[in-house]
Image (cartoon, rainbow over all chains, first blue to last red; front, side):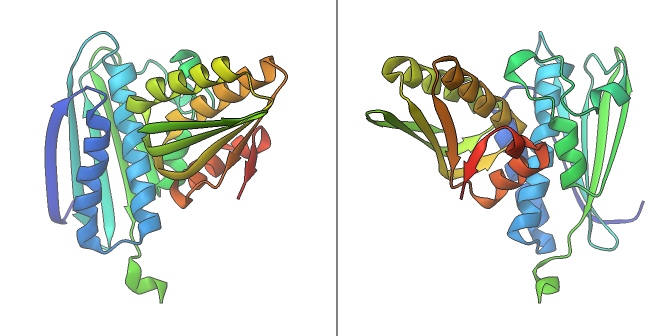
Length: 146
Length: 102
């Protein structure tokens, strides 16, 4: 796919890196002149995706999380969050609102938030091999606010 | 993430300052539950007016705090969420279970 710009970063699946991932995406997306609302939506979705990696992909160890952001044609921001962790046996079930294997500390709303805050969400996963989450969001930008 | 408590019987005011995500949620909940156990307030207000970011981790924190208040016969209200946390509250449907005041 044709892109104008990209960034690729990898970091260990430590919870302190959730805020780092949000910040990286926020700074990268700012070149597209998004509104504060759009920026908040994208950062929220990234926070959910990276948190899933920290909690579910690598439950008993620290693994690698890859974050890639691309600016695609048509003011489209694409975000990939990839891990090489345990994978999701049933992706459809995992995407169901309120479904969680994370116990009382989790709300089971992660994928629901990603879906409602982004335009598209694709999840590919293989048990034992890892998970890729690809999300896109069209950023209309401040100029479109009139 | 800062949790600031102010108790004037029977009301406990808990102000959350900073970003509430998975990394900060456990400690935030611990601080909130500690304050609830210490004061056993009749009413608790969670002030989110200085909470600059929240993801779905915050939903579980709010529901746990509310459950704890109900167990002791009290009530919980969430006050003044900023726009980003408000969108998360709205998308999660938590409005139906939690009293939110703007």
